[in-house]
Length: 250
Image (cartoon, rainbow, N blue to C red; front, side):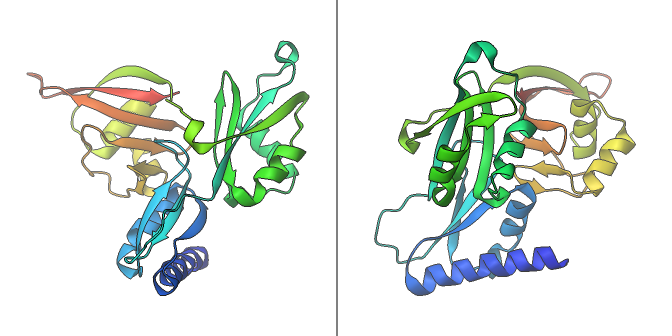
């Protein structure tokens, strides 16, 4: 276990212990897919139950809430949603995820205080902790050469349905390496390399086994390639191939 992983496990364990001892809900920072994987692997070592949420369904970066058994009050995640919108859409640039993240990092905002960044027609939705929401809203006035305005959106008023592109594929088996190779248009050996280096996540859990079985409903995230969901699996053809339908989260 490397030092970074050991530190995270200790931090998560301490948060769960504090939740149980003080009978309060405690929260982590925003966890990435690898950190969420470590959280789930550490479940037996924790002192309380936990839930995770990132501001919307299918969020990739999520905050963990550690919940004591004898909880007696209503709670909510200490996160906010900030909408950054171009002041003049006519002259706005086509901003990328990297552009937005770079602008926020330039303000001194730490990555762990930020959840997903959603680029939509309405603008850029930024999920962040309560501690940085006001500073972000007041300070982020320009991304590259585009002037933006900021507005905080109440959690109960935020609704988002990711755009999906429907695709069809056909594979020799539903092994993870075979499905990943087909979806990402990689060779089998290249897909296996992605898996062995820890770049493939199935339902937010890192999978290192090439032959791990995929099934309907599974969400596959591959670093640098995107997020996909297997929607349906058809009957095996006479040639022993398996047709399936999947969505690309655009």
